[in-house]
Image 1 (tube, each protein chain N blue to C red):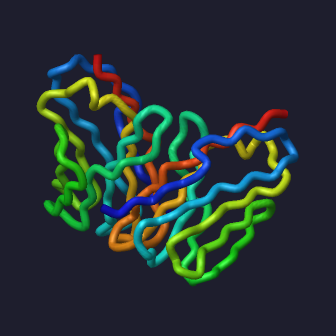
Image 2: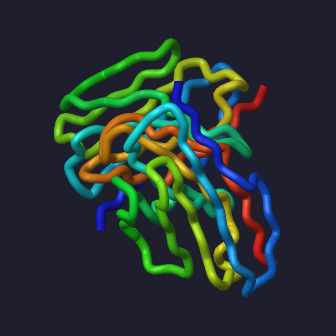
Length: 108
Length: 113
């Protein structure tokens, strides 16, 4: 079946360092979404990418969608303690499949 | 504006007992509805989704079932809980299947003892 994998599973950074999580799908996607889940909370939508090669920015966050529409990345510049949580990519074909997630820990 | 409510928030159940989790959506009609399960420290597993009343698609064989008796109501049930059913259950809705933002409820944390 369709799988969406993310690496790394866990990342621990010092506040101010950059962070990147990578997402890979076994199948071509119609779009990809990114969500953030704070500890103990529910996932919250961050962004959706639709076009091949698309790049979008939200303040310190940069999202990319691969040319083949099978991979994506999220890069956070100069992490802050408020960035702590698990970041999920969600691949869309005829349904939405969550990636395995990357847990980000930020040390002040 | 649209809202999604999910309850109960927390429950502890013995093995073999029944389960009923409820989810309702307000402020929209004909939503696509989803049940996800998240084991501790893991990703979200899609359990069921529904595109309309009485229409349920199951993603994985399991001890659970889902029903959609009304347009904006989605229920997750089990007749006999297993230890492996423990986890964080999330209801979500989206305006379109396979596209558009997923809006999540606050979640129900189930512990089976």
